[in-house]
View 1 (cartoon, rainbow, N blue to C red):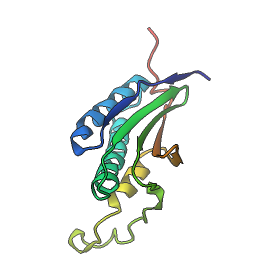
View 2 (view 1 turned 90 degrees about the vertical axis):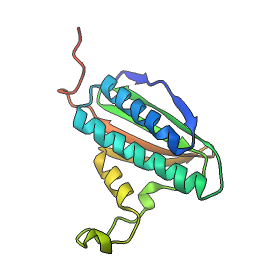
View 3 (view 1 turned 90 degrees about the horizontal axis):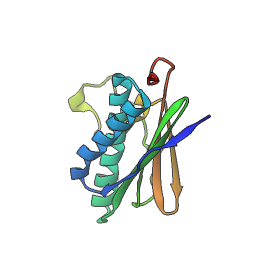
View 4 (view 1 turned 120 degrees about the horizontal axis):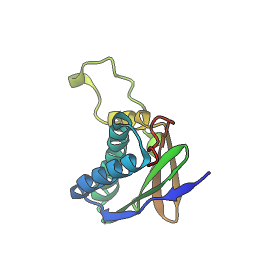
Length: 150
């Protein structure tokens, strides 16, 4: 199986970086031949986790830091990761909302974005490595999605 390592991106851990993160995700999704619908779901997922890194990890913690993006493409998948240096936090530990049938104005705040983000990708993994949170997003490349040679 061949694996292509994607160019990495390092940005300030601020909300102003979200546009660049979104552009990066769409660029690598296109390079992997991911269809537009799946690419937008991936962008939404990465955007949600990046936003949480900035707001909850850095801003609320009184911290400053960077966001690190990278990934790889192999024959079957596109893998994108985002890392931050805030306190360890596994997004999978965010409880799924249990009030989805309740009118919006009556719902508890929080958790819905992470819930939707993690459901929008084919696989999500988390690890804490070398002082960094690493959220890993994996999208399957179907044979129909692969770029055509030529």
